Image 1 (tube, rainbow, N blue to C red):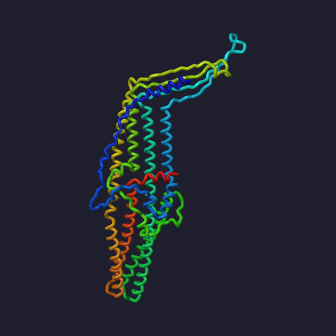
Image 2: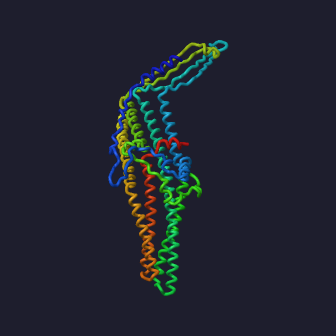
Image 3: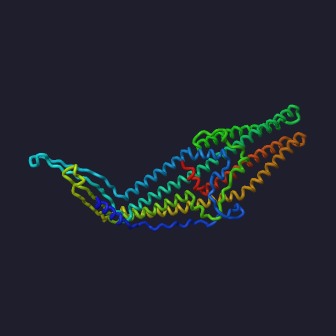
Length: 464
């Protein structure tokens, strides 16, 4: 048995050559700093990995995100894929180790030429079956490729985790916005109905024309149609939230008005340096895939060289089973060498693996460039949306004042109802736009959190 162990150790010592190219991280081909200028918000000096718990400070939203992380079936699927990739890596790594098995063989014989009691022989020991000595690193590179595939799958699951947090928060904010728009439509319908009632009364007294009544009714019917539409949207928003969370959402966890959420949705600090993007989960996933493709080249190259396999047996042999462990030592070694002579397929595999590596380089650089654009777009939106919100608020205030003046002039008989109708529609549209721009501002903060890649600590903390 000592001989067999010595053979295995010697075989492992022969495995030292690696034909894979030396890995160097490709140039990310992006600017070293995020854009600056009139369209961009001022950046902080240092980039911080913002935790979603620090950015989403509303207790109701935090509860829903925690439920989503624990119960969302899409994230569960991603975690299961990570476990599967880990198992494949372990299986591939096991191919580098010798397979040892214990066996016992007994032989009994008899006949006229044999002794009265017959002949018997017993042999027991350890078997090493067809162990490939990894002379040129084929098995080692295949193991490296499987390991990088596992890490890429894990990074993909981290990316899915960040996306799930962002989608849950966005769905909750969208529900809040649609609830606001529903309330606005209901308020507009009630106000327009009062104006219609007044107009009908004035028309009955022959103080206004039938045209004024019909014009007033248009606003009522438009608001009524919007009430039905926003009622549908609120129901669908809640259904989307249920799917993300993976279970029912109680009324107590529904959002308040959108304006009340403005101070509880934080803005993640992007920092000045774009190097933070190299740690974004999807960028890490692309880099691990590139590393795996680099190792595949080494495995494909090794197939062009001879392979050495070893089969060995070490044990004892005895004529009596009871004296087996006191029997004579026996061992055998059967090395075999296979050398490729004409293998055009193996050379094609090398060319294929090199092309896959080149594609992985482009995929990695594209992932970095996409990440840079997403962060830059979110920063540009953050830098300009404040002025847009201010202008939209002023427009809504002016539209409200215009409606007040129009209604006063209409009641005084100075203007016809057309001016009031126009003012009502303008105010309704301005308040809808005001709600929409506030939603866009809050969603952009969530987008920036996702574009920066979230915080690794969240992934470790949220794992089931």
